[in-house]
Length: 128
Image (tube, rainbow, N blue to C red; front, side, top):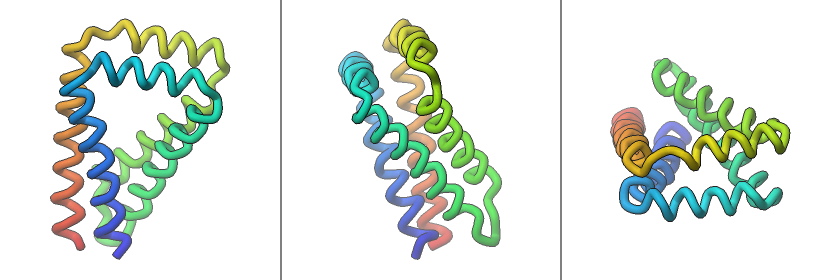
């Protein structure tokens, strides 16, 4: 059941994230900046990111292993842990750099997240 439920839940979260990035990149940027400014909310978001990556790793590591999803899970986990462990000054610089991205680049990244979400849903459904 973990093989089906894990990837499908993660793909739903990624789908919502990607659709919001495509539909309202300015709103998403503003919301994320506010969330990252609050220490408790930042902790919850980054712990959730790391946990979803670990969950994806565990769901993809069962035989037969799919190394693409294992790699994606590792990247998601590392992203959450690195952002959680950064000093405040470095994290603020990363957020300023990310805020400077144009809206079209956020839309492209949202489209890529939607694509990954769909691929993960198909993969989870076919393995389940």
